[in-house]
Image (cartoon, rainbow, N blue to C red; front, side, top):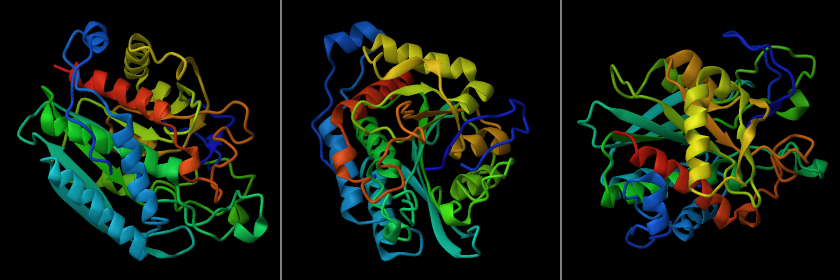
Length: 336
């Protein structure tokens, strides 16, 4: 997960500072959910989502070119298939900022692929190859588990995939797990004077945005989940999302408040974050919103565990997962 931006010129050529299962239970519908969304909503199981996060973390760091990365990728693709998705593995060789060639893989699960009306949900599934923000300098080249930074968003989407297998939406849903999001510039190699965006991040979504998995692919909009599992998470209206898709941001946040998750979804604008959604918006032209934790109390905006070896299961909270999951479920099941 990249860095938050303290200043930005809001225009189409923005200038930036560079900035993963449980089986669950059969879905049921609560009276509160029905009254809130006015449609029957399958029940998002936070325990199941937590289990999916743990399953990814149990593989170890999911760094491209590693065996752990390959095994976890197979697990994710198989899970989507088991829930009835038509799966596309978008294999690619990417070149990292330091010249490393990355054997990467975007994993796409298409639900009801025959439907023309579609919504895209996405998260990145790789983890940071180095804990370059760790207070212990000896850990700065150690790969991280990425429980919150990567696995949390994927865990929520796998639980939504389980719901889709029982209760289809009226529109088609595409779940995309982007790879190589977190192989961005190491802190030791960073240039703090850089004013333009560091394109070393989000390599998988950059690739997909130029070469989508399906010719002529189109969707109404996209929702990106990143850093959605920490205890007490607060999701402010991220700046790039507000620039490209303000109406969609308001729609999601209003739905969250109607569902009783106002303490998580804050009706204020947060910072600007370089994330997968930037490329989906700018390169592909699909309105895409980033639901991402913004911690006003931390120096980096993401929390003290971010890009450290402490990003483990201790930083995953079922209530945060539930707030995000129930919000996204309400949005997609109300789509006509």
